Each structure stands twice: as structure tokens, then as C-alpha cells.
Length: 178
Ligand SMILES: Cc1cc2nc3c(=O)[nH]c(=O)nc-3n(C[C@H](O)[C@H](O)[C@H](O)COP(=O)(O)O)c2cc1C
Image 1 (cartoon, helix red, strand yellow):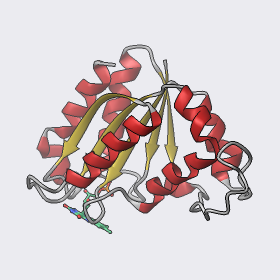
Image 2: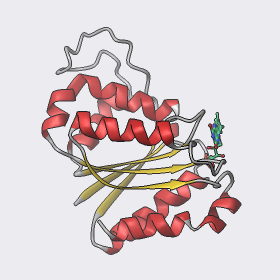
Image 3: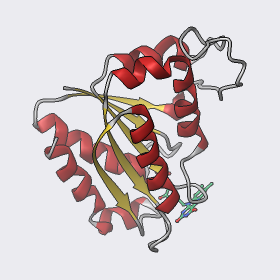
């Protein structure tokens, strides 16, 4: 299976990257082909809502989403959303990717991709992942993605905290389960 890991933090060796790397290690041990895509190295602009694409056509923005990521998504079997929680929600750089699904929503829906969520946050409370996880579930439902699992790493505010948290191991195990 082809797996596309979308890393959304600017901390390329940070906590969410740590989970993404461990997930990748687990899936590769099962023979999957993994591509890591670092959003912060890319030029991916927000959807402007111009509707020129008509939800099924070229986006007028000639950025890395239109010229690179869209085809990577088309060619993958599974998308993995790796993220730090920002103000109880998805970081803007990853939300921008989801909003840009707009130019091929129906096509993407019919592809029935698999998906997984890897999220970290500083806090370790009952509510810190509520919106993040609800949004993921809603997007999976709407886009007809099959949820393959989630790792919600509370108390993972720095790479040191994350190393000790046990969540990198959980991400590896999730990878091994794919
Ligand atoms: C803009 C911003 C907003 C944040 N919002 C939250 C938050 O709502 N709850 C929380 O627990 N941590 C929050 N954090 C902390 C990060 O989620 C946490 O430090 C995470 O480990 C960073 O992951 P990274 O190393 O992959 O960048 C925030 C950090 C930033 C920079």
C-alpha cells in the first residue's frame, strides 16, 4: 500500500514528527511504501473560495498543492495527518490542505482512501483533543475515508516530554497494525 504522511509542524524534529517517524517505521516493516510530505517546506495557500474549480477542476492557485500534492494524494492509498494541536484544533497549514480538497472533492470521495490521525499537545486533559478528533471523524465521514486509527499524545509538549510519554511507541504499533 502507498501511504502519504502529511507532517504539519515547522518543528521538523519535533513531537508530531516523532510520532510520524515511528508510524512510518512500523508501516515500512510491513512492506508499505511511505512518502513523507513536510507542509512547512511547501507553498500551499488557503482556498480563496473563488469557485473557479467548480469543485472538479484546476485550482487557479499554481502552488505546491495544485502542481504536486494533489497528484500525490490521488496516487496514495492512505493519508496520515500528523499535527500539533493549535488552540484545540488543527494547525492552519494542515487545514489549508483540507480546504484545498475542494477542487477535487467528489473525485477524492470516490477513492475511499484510508486515513490516520497522529496528534500531540502540551496539555494532558480530557478536552484537549476534543475538537481535533471530532473534526477528523467528521472529515473521514464526509470524504469517505476509512479511519485506520488515531494516536492522541497528551502531555507531549516538547520532544523530551514526548519521548517519555509512550506515544511514539503507540504510533509505531499503529503503523505495525496497518
Ligand atoms: C500556536 C500554538 C498553539 C498551541 N495550542 C495548544 C493547545 O491548544 N493545547 C495544548 O495542549 N498545546 C498547544 N500548543 C502546544 C503544542 O501543541 C505542543 O507544544 C506540541 O508538542 C508541538 O508539537 P511539534 O513539536 O510537533 O511542533 C500550542 C503551540 C503553539 C505554537
